[in-house]
Image (tube, rainbow, N blue to C red; front, top):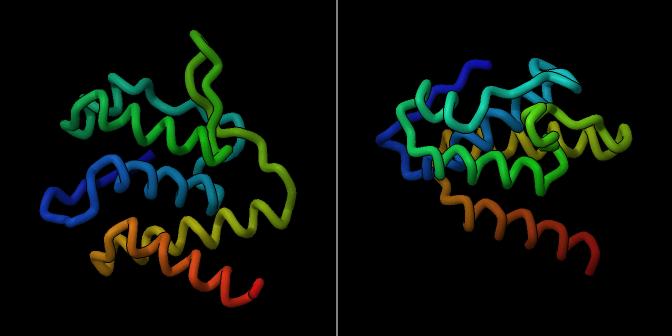
Amino acid sequence: MRILIDPRSSVPPYEQVRARIAEQVGDGRLPVGTRLPTVRQLAADLGLAVNTVARAYRELEAAGLVETRGRHGTVVAPGRDDATDRLQRAAGEYAVEAARLGVAPETALGLVRAAIEARTG
């Protein structure tokens, strides 16, 4: 798992970690069942605070991308279905592009909400 954090980015480090892992899950570089590094290990590897990585893992778990199995660690969760998997890949790509462009997460989410509302009336 390769993650680079840009300290000059306006995107918070936890979001950079979350987006990179989501991207790698979405495109298959991290297949189902892959065990992620411990929060402490990844924080040390990236030079980040433990709470920063813990927040990224919590958000990934809330999105259904990973699951924590107690002492067995955090692993990539099985996909729910093809449509959800495809949408997750698109969301990962969108998150990466938003971060690359320097768009704040709140703004990027607002754009998605507006697009969904425009389609559903």
